[in-house]
Image (tube, rainbow, N blue to C red; front, side, top):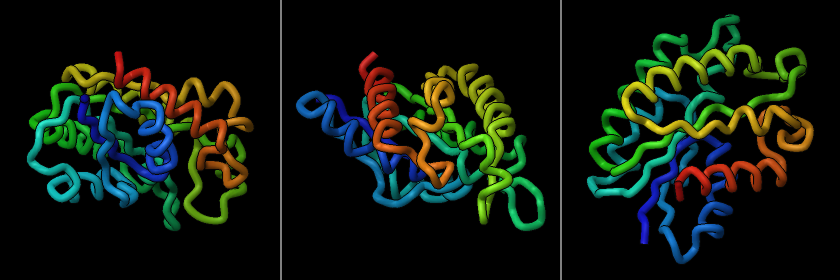
Length: 184
């Protein structure tokens, strides 16, 4: 049976159980109950979340928190820092897994920046962060799981009224995409 680790923010938390259900009997799904939040938080906590064991696959995402705008009008994690953090995370995880998969950040509603009461995001930023991170990580042999594009095709169906989290259809769509990448 495959041993799979899922790391990531609340998007990952929402599809984790569904992935475990789909892969029941084929893989054991591990991962922290904690929201892995932003990239620096993930890096800081890797030692506790990913014990010194061998995994067949580690699948992770960061980005929703990283691309938030803070009260000072600046993005939470500047692009260069975000990419450097993903590369550092990949280097650590690469010592603990046969395969690494990075999942792109999911889209938000187009009006999220105008309507979010706190920490707004923009799809234009998410797209740049996704593209830049995937370029850097794929060059290191990390597989890429594009969760952004399939969900962007129908944001009202897949992204909830809070403008960032997944609807039940979004959970199912992401779970299927994650399982497909893991079982490739």
